[in-house]
Length: 438
Figure (cartoon, rainbow, N blue to C red):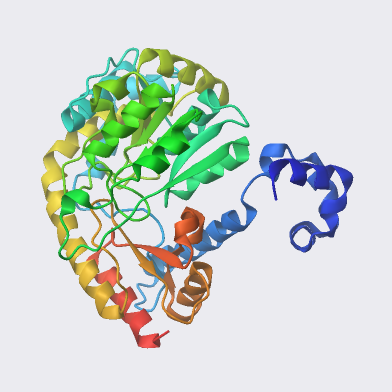
């Protein structure tokens, strides 16, 4: 239901007749009248699915830690890569916690934009990874994970009713952010060709006409390469096209680069490295993927000072600062990456190849991802949707996967499953699904 109609239904009391409202709130319908338009626009069905997935994932973790049972739930739904053996995390955390300076910093508010040492570390990492140089004092902003940076970037630069361009499929969080902000979403599809017998250079190219049409009058475009959910990468020529169109239409580019350390078919290219894009691009990233530390909530935004300063001012009103302890440990974690990045690449290539083999043995037909650590497949015959298949996997096979529908229109009848964890877990999950022969 459109945002305005939903609001009218709630304010007039008609919403109480909706079966979904009755099921969720019952006699507590009164509280529905107190909700803001942003809350009323939230994707309730999808968020309830995430709650179900999180409960299953928590159960999986508890079972595996407490009992070591071989029949416990296997979670392939979440983007949490296992890098537990790559670097000495306990030693890094312990060293940071024992520094006298860390103790002093915990007793005061950190700088809203970030402590100088942490900002410098992020700037050096970006330059080493992409070649783009940022001034840490004016062009870097720390945030509590990439998600906070994405949310506040849209809030800062796109007003309700304005248009934002998304690709299809794309990370579901983008759509949800736009939905709760009352933004108009314009989707641009990508054609994925079969790998065999094709020139990799022409794979995953963007339809120029569709992109030009979507960019007209748009306030922002969000790109994510490598992509969640299908692992595709945006061709460098298409990055140049996006940059040119953004300049023509005065459009902000928000580049989600959390998977930049997981590229398999080509070297990562940041759109900010393209001269036409540098002055209008906000790069968002974090340590959640590169270091396998989603619980740390260590993220950042990088861009021209004219964009970063207002973003930082807005963010300081919403969430005053990033934890001082996170900022203390950030430089050491970033430094450690240079020592394990090659091993990470080699091990994940091996995991990807193993995952493709076992997925195809199970009967799925995923394309080889260019990056990230997901497979993207059609649900087997006999299932009406990704939701239907995901529920069957959980109830019958004790395997958690993500239905494809929340990722966009092209996700209908698809599902996403992660191979970022240990090979053995993925292999066992595929064996369970194959044994039940859906």
